[in-house]
Amino acid sequence: TAMLMTRLVNLAHRLCDTAEEDIATVAALIQDQLGLSSHTVISCVERIDRQLVQIADSLGIGLMSDKTEKEVEETLHCFRRQAADYIAIQEALPRPKPGQSISDKVRLIQHGMSLLFGITRVMCLLPDSANLQLQAIGSTHCFGSELLKSISFSLDFQKSGVVTSYRAGRFNLFRQEELHSMADRQLLQIFQSTILVCIPLIESGKCSGIIVCGADDVEYSCIKKAQRRFEQFGVHAAATIAAL
Image (cartoon, rainbow, N blue to C red; front, side, top):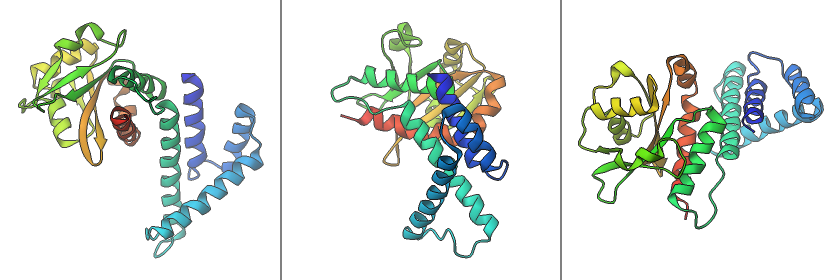
């Protein structure tokens, strides 16, 4: 369920954040909520740390060389957070089954956005075959399904935040007053939101489409802090779309 996934991600992040909390304390909390023994949790953290150091060394990242103990711990902390985000996204957005239609894949993406971020006002925009415009793609009963055919963005729209985000392959948050394109403002009206979130679908270093969703002012700072996780989700979503 969404509540269980949120709890798992929260506990994983607290476990990773050794700069703020004692691992033993969080391990005890995990034992209470998930039934895993503290010894098991602490052993997993120690094993992951060793593996991260080995991987960094094999790739020549220089995790240990020329770094203070504090710098090494900060690097490990960052890696652990990335690993926790990666696992959570994989669980929220499983690979599609062979033969699934584009609509089915978009449904998976929308479900993943709801499960991982609690965002339900979501649409996917993909370029047409001539690469002249972005067209909204969805599925039956998805958000705004009755309007999908009428939602498109010409790639010549220089002032569109959606088009700019797609062309640059960059995650963006736009407040209502920052949108200067009529098409962007209309999309915001459809979402009945005050914030437009643009998440690029990055495949092999190139943007293959974009996820757009609506949010409210109170969610702005939370979404901004979770930018890296949204970007990772965009990479997984691009792989979902491209899967045969």
